[in-house]
Length: 330
Ligand code: PMP
Image 1 (cartoon, rainbow, N blue to C red):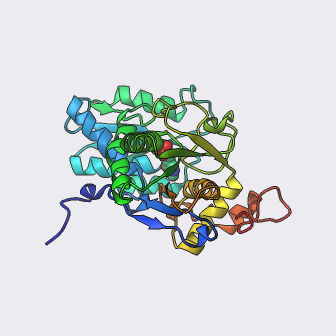
Image 2: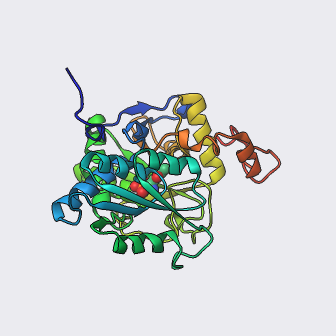
Image 3: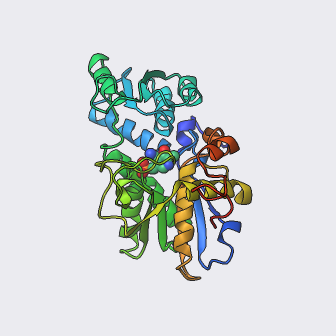
């Protein structure tokens, strides 16, 4: 018999799959690392597991304790899954713009969800940052993973994502492309790949236009999970050789193409990373091997990227708007 003791044991070891239709006419081999095949449905399962285990080892998280984190999405699912396995409670604090569906996913795993107003600045006492800090103080035996500052976030990628990619490509990877949110993925994976290849592997970040990583000031964009308006401690500025800025229009167009042409139903930040990888691949040769990491699946975005009304409302489907028409971008 071959089985896992628990779903948590299935985190990581995600496959690489070749992009075919999207890479037509391009010379390099472009491979996607499909992170939605993690049991919680995203790359964030990796950091959840490592952050929790490190906090247990250091004594910050004690038996029966409560994990408190401001998150509405993938990190919450990963933490809730690990918490259920290990007998911890979870309280997630999120702004009221987060869809009810996303809140219900967290509740389904047994987490408590505290909703805060979106329309207040981060230092306001009712902001979700302030409320999560207050709850950590009020709840007995509480621990806050703080994915934006926790060194175990990039460390999880240094110890899992990086070695997996190196092994899966037999050391033939030449370029690694990932979107940047907390920066954990690119910093940890990129550091490992550079070390093991003695600097040969180039690391390329993909960033929404307007975010700080590509020189913006934090101007709003619609793609979720990536880009920042501040520099998190988990982002190592020494790793990326290049940052490619991608517009919302292009990110969403490529996201739809991934589903339509590659049967990869993935989230908007995947389209963003893939758009950057394709732009990079145009200048590379037949011996190059590009690996692009796709962080999550598309089910959580059916009402947005995959909804024609939503796309039209933001001008992404209308040819006479400022947004690009889907299918026109590539
Ligand atoms: N895409 C999605 C959907 C995410 O949730 C995240 C995490 N914020 C990222 C990309 C970026 O990953 P990282 O935080 O490791 O930079």
